[in-house]
Length: 516
Image (cartoon, rainbow, N blue to C red):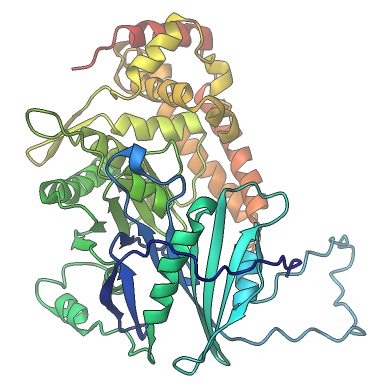
């Protein structure tokens, strides 16, 4: 642990204390939490190992009324485990095969997280512990409280607070963060939460009702009930879940028509993806579509600033938010929500249909944006239209001569594509839209073959590359294999294509496109 810096707890200072909402029970954890009334529970990521409950202060409607840093309070659960036994210093290394080059020894992994100190050291590296203040024993646990302050060089305006319950086999801890100017007020509230927390032995999760449903005639039609049960058991307070044949749609919005349309459209779009990109075999995977209540909740959950949705292959979740626009008169407009859904659902489908296939960004993001123009009506995908998010941007770039030459952008790696993300996303969309819809492409056999040749070559070459790798090949090695496959795919796709002529035809076609 880094050098401790001394923090003095100031006693007797008057601060506002948020009233608590009594008795949020988490039977599977053996915990009862009195939550501040102005806080709401936020879901944790499916692959989160330590944080079992996460709360954040509710955001005022007016941005001017919001704090500079949104106060948050998480409950961390740490089970004790012994440190691994180190081999004796005199042990001889196992030699490799004859002629095998020596490999530089990898850095030792960090020790296991088995205490609050280890957790903070590894998961909150930008902060240092203040002087601790011991408390009385409660529920068989020793209690300790301390502050967290930014480490030297960390210029964050945040400060933190920890209240830990420790016993031989387990540590529980409430960890709060807020702006330094709000610390006095927030700590008073968090201390009250800690004083009211009740700890019992966990009862275990009762999933009998869910299992009965999936064993019934209604529930048996849904694949992978174990995945669905896990998804539903992990729902945060106020969230709901709906089953579709291939997805679990979890949502935190009261807009039930929106959720029903998402459930319908996600299945219809999947059928459209299958038509355009037939899978190598049957897709049996079930995944989650998570609809956050608003942009703020989406960002709190893990969305990147500047993004509107994302597909996380590690957690098998497609995440977006209810992006409806409510006009002063007339119905609300949910179109932006579906622009994101149709784009990210393509990435989700490609992940399951072809594995970790690594296309160039112009193809990957451009195709996702192409599907964002889908017009779904009366249970069918009627057509793929112009993407309203991208058209104006690329038309302006073409008029001003600022678009990227085709011979350059078709070879760009992701880091290059992201440097001017807004314009490059728009150009990638327009390239795919042109190659799929322009009469000039349909009439030119070589141009019409560009997209299918690229995709088929990429699949074949990447499969060949992977077949030559060891099963435990590192991410870096696989990434290089993907890069080689991409290079061969783009060479095959544009072989004997006059890129200058293609680019001029694309520019003329794109400048004439109009929104419906």
